[in-house]
Structures are given as C-alpha cells and as structure tokens.
Length: 546
View 1: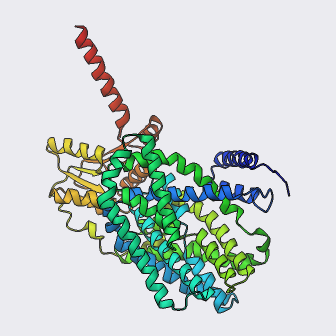
View 2: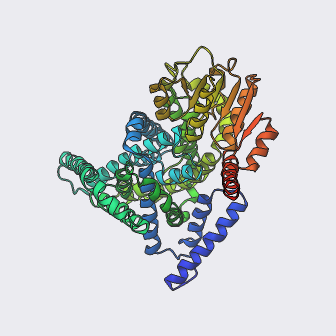
C-alpha cells in the first residue's frame, strides 16, 4: 500500500490519474464512466487507498446536481404525460425482476432470506448512470429517455421505501410497523406540500431577485438543490429525491434553461467523484468464488430486465424500438443495490459473501450496460427484427385520428423551430404537409391546429412504410444527427421511395456523409443562416456607402 499523506496532494493525484485514464478511454473510444470506475478501483483500498470523506462529499454534491438538472428538464406537464407509463412499467419491472430473480437465486442454492435480498437488489437500476449516459447522448428529452427517467424515479421511490422497511423491521426499532408506514407516507406528503407551497408563493417572487445576477442565480440554485437533498435525507428519503424535487420546482420558471446550461460543467466535474467512489467501494477481495453465480444473475439483468420492459411497453401500444431503448435503462443494478445489501449485512440478514456477489453483479452489469446504451442504436439495427413478436398490431394512441389529407406533397420529420418554419413556408406555397414527430406535445399542438400529423420517430426503420410515401414528392428531415438522418434515408430507399429526400446537416462533415449516402438535398441551416446574416450586413454597408 502506498502512503500518500497530505489530502491536497492526494486530491491532485486523483485528478491526474482520472485525466490520464479518461484520455486513454477516449482514445480507445470507451465510455468515460467505465474509465472513472476503473480509477476508483485504482485509488481505492485495492491499491493506493487514497479515498477520503472529502471525495465522498464531492460525489454527493455531484449526485444532487445531476438529479437537480434532470428535475429542471421535467416540468409538471411532462410528469403528468409520462406518469401512467412510468408507473406501470416501473412497478411491473420491479415485480418481474423480484419474482424471477428470487427463483434464480433459490436454484443457485441460496437460502430464502439471501435469495430475497439478491432478488430485490437486482430490481434497482442506477438513475445517476442512466441520466449521465442519456445526457451525453442528448436523449434525455426523447420519448424513450423521458419514459426511462420516469420508471427509474418509480424505482427510486420503491428502493427508499424498501430500505426504510428493512431498517424498521431489521433493527426492531419500530414497535408498530403499520404506524411507521403511515408516518413515512405522512412525511412524504408533507414534503410535497411544502415544495408545492414554495412553488406557488415564494419561488416566483424570490427567483427574479436572484436572477439579476447570473452568478447569484447559480449559487442560489445549487443551495436550493443541496438544501432539498438534505431535507429529503433528513426525512428518511434519499438525497436524490430531494434534489430532483428541487429541480422540478424550478422547471416551470423562465430561468430553467439558464440554470441548466451554467450547471452542466459543474455537474460533470463533480460526477467524476461519484464514479471514482463507486469504483473504490467495490469489495474485490470477496469476489473470486462468486463468479459463476454472478454471471448467471448478470445475464438475467442484462437480458431479462430490458425484455420485460419491451413486452410491457408493447402491450401498451408503444413500438418495439421505443421499448428497447427505454428498456436498456434497467440493464444494470444500482449503487442503491450495494447500499441495500450492506444494510442487510448490518442487520444480520445476509453475510459478506452475498454482499460480494451483489457487488460483482453490479460491476459486470454497470460496465456492460454502459456499452449497450452508448451503442443502443446500432444494436437495435441488428436485433430489432427479433423483437417484433412483442409489438402489438394496434397503433399507439398518438397514431390515431391523424387527419391525413387526401393529397400529401411533403412528409416533414421534426416539428421543432426549424421544422415548423419549413412547414409554414411549404404551406404558403400551397403544398400539403404531413408532419411527423416523436414529441407527443408537438403532435397534439399540430392536431389542435387541425394540421395533418403522425406520431413517430425518424430513427424507427419500420415507420416509413406506415406513411403515404406514394403520394409525397418530398421527404424532409429537419432533425439533426447522423444516425437519425441516415436511418431514415436507408428506410426510405428500402421501401422503394423514389421522391426527393432532404436531410439536415449541422456541419460540412455531416453534409458530406449525407451526400455520399445518396441524399438528394442537404439542408445546412447554420451555414445558410450565417450567409444570410453576412449578406444583410454587406448590403447594409453598401447601402450606407451609396
């Protein structure tokens, strides 16, 4: 073991190791999460043993800021929209994994009590890791991203209630478990009521005062996030729940984008320490004898958990692609699983060997699922056909009553600001436009305006054959992204579409890729806007000079 000494020197060494390993991971095209967990193993008890309470504190603040930023993006309307699917999918996955996981653990020779702990530990997925990955891929605001975050929050609530119950029953501190449960519910409702009152009467008045200074606004936001995280922890809930509520409370304010943008870099830096402490907490010396059982349980988590999500979402009318991408969010166990298992050891329900098994499953599933999510779209392209039996023939509710006109000249994918502007210009030129978007809110807005619209994802290769391609002269994709545009182009050509296909590129690199792939037209909104601005300035100067 290496004795380092001074905490400031240790902190500098940890940062240097993280930067080097992160650089190596980037060079090898590997996710940074895996690299930082490896850093944690290196600086933890297994080697350097230079972890400290200060690093743990930074990790906790990073977690709070991560969930705070997520809350900022999920306003109350989104929560109401995703509530039903999140609740059904979250509870269904927890029930399925618990029951089947218990049976697998019993078959592996564990006692009923140990099997129960193992099964429950397998049900929890890491909200922190999934949110970080989806944020890096810019998929937080996609349909599958919002659904995944929704049922992960349901899981977080379940794990908090489970840990409270274990503490109460295991230590014998609760003389009346029924009253303890009532007290927990009462505290939760009280916290929600307090936040709701602050949202109604205090935040709208106080936030503009802080908003006069960007620095003060960010400081106040961090203080609010950490303060509610502390309140959540003090009330017996997780810090994550409190921080998330803090974000939700500001999500409907006009300041949320400014706060979110300024906090992103701070959040990413502090999350480094979470992944380091997660790697450092892994008990590597107890894992040797648990490898066979860990492989079996890991395969169940990596395959069974996403599959049950696909099945449930398919039964509710969602397409297999949405179910698959959302289901990958539960293809690992959580840091809460390790905390839950450690709690079982502390109350004498399980031994250190069972804790070691759960730790090894966590290491395997977190590592593998990171790659699965990072490369989710190419993976779906290869295995999507096998998921067809889990997709219902009945359409998703957003597909119904699309109000398609008898004649369609243009099919437009993406109804945001750029796509909406294109649609307006097309209609001014007397062209009939069918809009396609994956955002249910935009679909409803178009439908309420009595405009023809279809709910769908441009990256879904099965979508084009559901559209009236034979009528359309043009198909335009206003959504950026190489994968999105190329997937749509390939699907259109596969279905025999012979009209004009226009794709959107945000750089010349993307434009060249689309041209080489066979796009008829490449839209360059940034380049064209820049040319327009420069042209206006030049014309103004020439006019002034004359």
